[in-house]
Length: 197
Image (cartoon, rainbow, N blue to C red):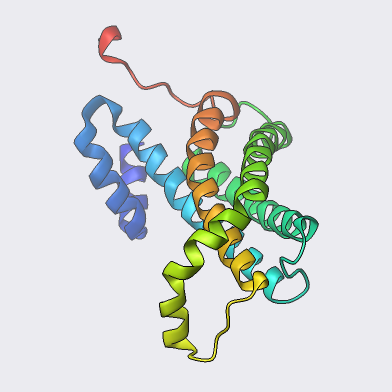
């Protein structure tokens, strides 16, 4: 097993870096490695999520109503769930195979939906006030890129929904990691705690 891990680390620079960092945590190295991989997957999911949101709001779902914001963030969320499940199943937790992929997908989706509900409620409540708060802060940067940009309620809503989404994604990442680690992927090797040594 050590040989395959070493071989895998040589083929993938991200694995090598994660293994190097996690190795500094002694008996907790495997859990740290899983968290770091989960975080990398989260970054990929964040790019999928935010990218989908920005594309939808720039094309077919401008954030002119609460419903449009909810639909766009939900579609972005679903795209990220699919990406995250595939990456976590095959990269973060490749040793989790006592449950079928269907069962794990259902558990993963349930945990993600709970996170989504919390995140969506947060975004729905916060995007307008955050737009009012953040727009004056980012306006000089936007005007530097495009001097003719004019502040509109749609622009404020876009900035507010993206800001709220960023905050929501970070908070929900911790929920998703711990809930999935101890329910969806609870069959992976447990790390010895200092008490059991």
